[in-house]
Length: 210
Image: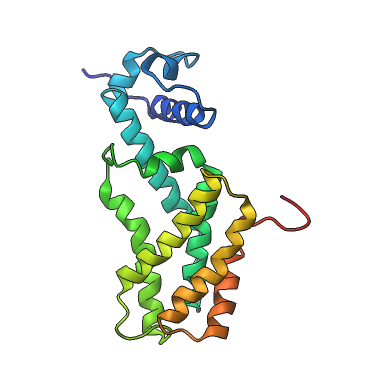
């Protein structure tokens, strides 16, 4: 009878590899199991090898992103929700920069590509709601606008989480998203208020703290 795999060991190895990325340690077959109490064979048992471990880490990043996006409850203001989803995206990137880096490494496949696509679909749904509410032009393509919103969030998150810029740069999300959404038909003042309300959940430092 085949031995049942222990999901705790799988999680342990993913977390160990992520921690090593965070501390800039070389992630190898031997180093990833060092000090864990499991043998190198566990990497093959649970992932089929190191490539499988990287694939699992990439999937774990999108799983975490989906969980963070799920914390954004739909409100009566879909434009606010769009900005809030962007803020949640940034929070995820800054909370787990190690997994965030590998999420977009196309050199490794995803275990469940559909699950990753669902993260973008959350933005698409918010755009569709805003369009139905008359906030965006009738000819607005939800996928295109959602993608543009994602690009803004991803660019800011990457520059701060894995790049050289300070967190203060995240405040630029408000004017950037406002410009994007007003270009799609929303009125400037109303749009700005909606975006400010949604983006306030992003981890932007204040004068009183980091």
